[in-house]
Image 1: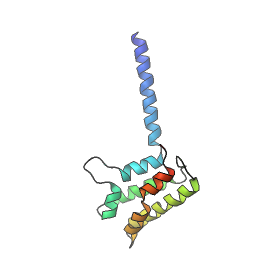
Image 2 (image 1 turned 45 degrees about the horizontal axis):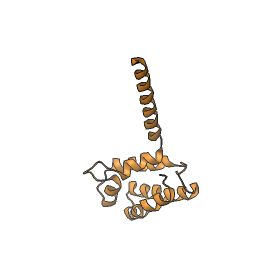
Image 3 (image 1 turned 90 degrees about the vertical axis):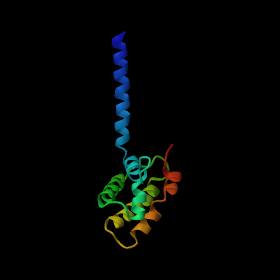
Image 4 (image 1 turned 45 degrees about the vertical axis):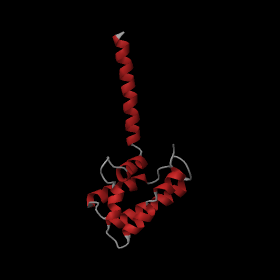
Length: 123
């Protein structure tokens, strides 16, 4: 009886870990969690970029994660439209990283969460 419980526990643990690692391989999710979510009481990286308080390291990592999305297929919607819209976000983040004039305004325009989520986000 104990062996069945142990075997079942190992199976459940293995499936849980597999699901967790699979989510970590999703570049869209990685970039969104890093740049657009924050622990309670902390400011999101995207908000820090908008108000000019993001560190160079935070901007660099955000840009790297955005670029990693590359040719990732969105959960729903047209892949070409997603690539175009997300490409604007990458370009704006590149401008922010290069500290170009008007970069924050371009980032603010490109970071329209609702526009992407309503068109491309799954469940």
